[in-house]
Amino acid sequence: MLKKRIIPVQLLLDGRLVKTTRFGEYRDVGDPVKSSRVYSDQRADELVFLNISRDQPNVTPLAEVIAGVSKVAFMPFAVGGGIRSFDDAAFLIKNGADKVVLNSIAYRDKEIITRISERFGAQAVVVSIDARRAPSGGGYILKSACGTVTEDITLAGHIAACEAAGAGEFFVQSIDQDGTMAGFDIPLIREACRSATVPVIGCGGSGDYNQLRDAFLETNVSALACGSLFNFSDSNPIRAKAFLSNYGLPFKVV
Figure 1 (cartoon, rainbow, N blue to C red):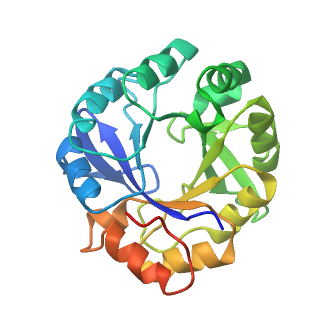
Figure 2 (tube, rainbow, N blue to C red):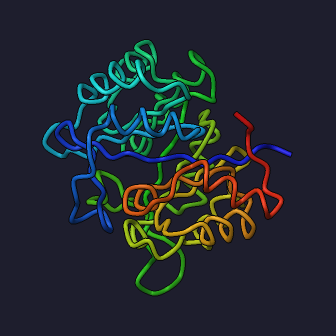
């Protein structure tokens, strides 16, 4: 059985870490390098860094973070936000990122997925999907550009197209649940897992270990990414994995 993963997700804004609520209001939650050192000590399986700055949508902030984090954290990490070309992605990987996370560009240019996959391997390409529940209650609306642009494609259709292009993993985030600590959108995660044959990371809504347990047991999700759970409680990856292991969920032993 493949090992499950717990992944702290860290949002970057003007050199600081922030935590948003439904992609809107945010709170400052610290320094990215110091936070990464703590997560490394707490045996996080991976780290995900996403630049959410709309004023600086490029890879410069990510490159700066990689330089600092690589000195203090010793686990794989993925970076995204502002990647606009293959050269951007290659620059980040060559400077220490294990994976790149693509969102808006994945809707516009599937070739970038293919080029990264062919050059660095499919495992290096994570396609991020931000989804909001449709007002009618049927299905999901996909959003790009930090949740500001609506995309005219279904969740299943986008996953199929990106996977055909070479995507090795999907990072699926619920905008509705983001920052609420009210639990994951399990139907969203379940639909993404049904549509993909590669690993899916679920994100948005983590508030306690029971919610992680439910998401793992009720879906085929490979990993869960957490922000608020670790930022606003005394929870950490070691405790989370110890709790979840009681339910027969396999985790890597460090």
